[in-house]
Length: 286
Image (cartoon, rainbow, N blue to C red; front, top):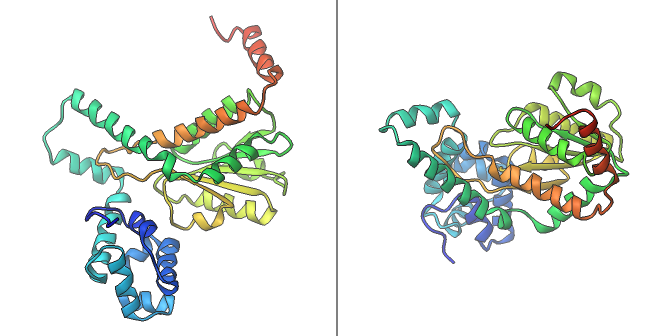
């Protein structure tokens, strides 16, 4: 099936039938985006060790007229996908203010679009393995994220504590070094990012690799500097939105799906009952 004119680059890449040398070009872009969007034809050829004709064929197989058109499309996509919230806010103010009802409809529509692509975006084997690792009570689990990812991880870790112990929710990054002092090879590290590539998460993945721990990255970016560092990758759909704050609904749903899968494999209720018993004794609910 031929890609449409507005198909994202990585979707075109997944559908293309490439030769071995063209596949080398594909790996170059997969490993180096978004920076590779700024690389010219000569630099691509030099980095991959192929001819300009090979790169041109690669571009055409992805549905672009030539390398120049592919490069322009990549640069436009990077600007849109990696734009800062304040930049999107400025663009919003250039238009007439929408009504609250239309804003709600747009937000619900965006969430539905993202969720509809979750099943196909996430590798089934990777998800199954993640659920096994997260549910393995013999392995210490560390949960790490920054910015908006941190409260989502805290929510996930709190509910996971109904099912298993040995979960460390990494708090502020200034405390990470203390919390990770006991990280060993039998541990599992689950981290999540959204849009960006946070330096603390990179350091966490590198530390996990150095200690021999198994690392999991949940992200909406299929390429970038963090991807090669993770042992297991879970990717949620990447949908360009003009709203100031892009929806994190896919991240939340994947985390909740992991909870459901772990709960299904933990039929014992003793730990959950003790959690609820403590809530009652502490008058947690009225």
